[in-house]
Amino acid sequence: MLYIVGLGLNIKGISREGMEAVKRCKKVYLENYTVNLPYSIDELSEKLGKKISPADRSFVEGLEFIDEAKRKDVALLVYGSPLTATTHITIMQECKASKIHCQFIYAASVIDGVAETGLQLYKFGKIASMPKWDLEKNYAPESFMEIVKENQSIGAHSLILADIGMNFVVALEQLRKAAETYKIKLNKLIVCQQLGTKRQKIMYRSISDIEDFSGVKKPYCIIIPGKLHHVELEVLESYN
Image (cartoon, rainbow, N blue to C red):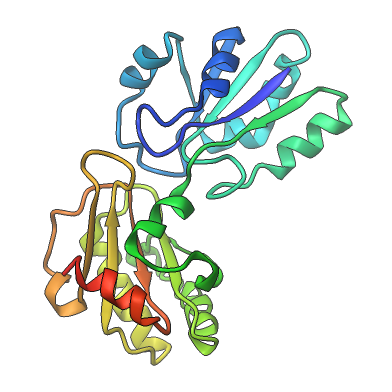
């Protein structure tokens, strides 16, 4: 049996169902390449009462843990919810092909957390992922801004998720440069820090007010608001 278990947004975010599944497992892996966790692996291990093995991208995409699940119960832990911020449909399909039972156990994700900004979730457009640039290798992709432009064409809000390990100041500078390329005017932005934790912070400020702000802690996300309903604006302005 293979369990793909969502951890939610904080150290207590795993569901009771998820906790019970993890306790049954002989092997527990933690996907550690998609987001900066707001706690350490040791803290999570203590919380769950299980030894946790970190799993990088090559390990997860190699799918070897599926073979393990033929012989014993195995869990793959995913920050947030396994089929929201991160998609693991490939794992599900491989399990079906190998005739291994796979169960997804859901939890809160960043999609739930951003609702606290006051923005209506059905008014969000496509989610954009911002990769970390490597200027020495002439790697500076700006195509994520195409998604923002498409969202803005229908008045939708744009949620931007930064690459793991990216400093906030660096992310903001990349956003500013990419916006210039696509001729998108950045007015007020929404910055969400460690949603769902005790260190949660939501800011709604002009880019000039936050471009030198280095105190945002990982994980964070940036939202470029689209057309705002007066109720959305009222809630946002409380985060100034």
